[in-house]
Image (cartoon, rainbow, N blue to C red):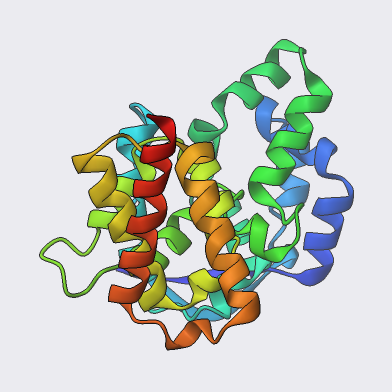
Length: 258
């Protein structure tokens, strides 16, 4: 059965953001007064987004569940436009109303710290970044726990492959957060064919030569294409071009390490 998404109002979002510590502590402890204030029906309004709710996986190791949850969330919201999926209100609303259990699972250490009264400042900051746009819109899309699942699915979906999520699987199986922030925060990733070529080369190198390391492999590739985008018409490059350029960068990094 389809559910109509209720969006948090702009006023309620501002109040939630300004009083984040108060509300997140209430969520962590299950304070009924805080929850009643947060979930007041006046804080949410109907949107035109309908979806069939499927729960995300909330147990197991992240390097396994992240890939599965990318598939679940992207397929649940495959009709979202990039403009809709860029809105902070959307992901805050979905987290609060439908995926709070997943949010707690994916930020378990922070919630445990709050319950135990340790590392309070660090945990509040971490939780805030995990649900709100604390780092600017583009970077925050891949820091926020829920939005990065959808965006990774959207940007890695390879419709011509027998498993359209093969690149999502590769990308999320190790160091997902660090990889996502470095790679997807770059402007060139908006060019889907270019990005698919780069990611396929990274995956092949990872499978055939050596495991991809964020600093040794991903950073040089990202820097190269960012520089290339500033001085050439990068949108003219094909997926095959991007694959070959990436392959050369990676093979060069291997030669230097010998």
